[in-house]
Amino acid sequence: MNSASTLYLLKEEYHLLMRYAEGPNPFTAGEKGSASGLLHELSRAEIVEKDDMPLDVIRLNSKVKIKDEGTGKVTDLILVLPESADIKQRKISVLAPIGTALIGFKKGQQVTWDVPAGTKTFQIIEVLND
Picture 1: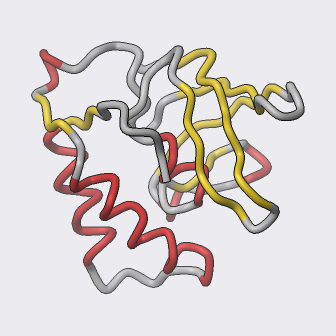
Picture 2 (picture 1 turned 60 degrees about the horizontal axis):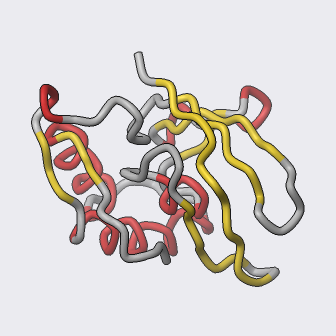
């Protein structure tokens, strides 16, 4: 789904996301497929403590600006847990394909994944964490 670049996850978020990906959560049709993709991403993550987490890594509640390398379109979004997702507020679930693809990557990296219309590549332009 993503390139071979290292992705980072906070220890607490890793455990929370594992529960979502493996647990009996009520998924939408699109999220069911993404749960296996999320498990794959989690399996290759470097797990870090809060003090060791780079500031520009996408994690839960990160405000992110990405650019579609194919169209040049820039999109702002916030990565959230499924129950907080709201497309009108640009809050994207970590189980949505784009959320699964972005989690753990940092500013400046490119992320590539397959979507129904083909392969998409995005450049991570900005990451803001509280």
